[in-house]
Length: 285
Image 1 (cartoon, rainbow, N blue to C red):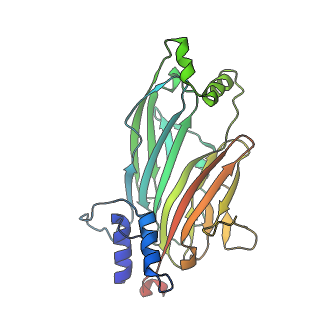
Image 2: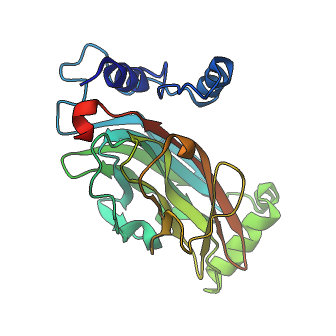
């Protein structure tokens, strides 16, 4: 393994550097890029086998709030962020029962030749117009092919004791409660799991997650140059679950990709950053 690869991987984990600069990229431009995309610590530097000689790593970088008290009628939002190699998938449990969020179960992948595969993934659970039935233990479950980790959140929904307290609900929250109570609640477009950062060798493939919930959701991806990606006769593929598959990474692919999910009710957006890394010469053979 070349010293450049070792440094790139080590500093990716420590959050100091996330890719090796190329000659055509000015030093100042590269330093500005690092400031914008700096990543916090994923694993302890002293941990044995840090430099990708182990089959897998998984770490909960940002767990959901361990204890949440929320007023009835409000919108509950829980999030967790996980770093791993290979990049994990995330789903949620309510009192040990899996919560189905549409495309979070579609695990379609074309990313079969990944070798570095370092990634940070974020998951989100949204429950509108919470009531007493939503008081529960919620669990963020992150797993890859080798390992599984969890983080739990105890949620308690506080009843509305006075009618005047409903004035604290926003118009959207009040509307969500009306629709929920009349069984006519529409299903808005939401992004429930996505890739925040991905690091992979140049010349290999990479997959950026963008899993959604909602009715009739349309997914659009935008490249780092700000243009909407055309999936016809291009190096990009839009998978059925909304993920973006990038074939044969090049240095020019480095940058921020935007996923937008929309339907006739709402729109949601996330960004993903990808870091191509020059492989060791031995890996190229």
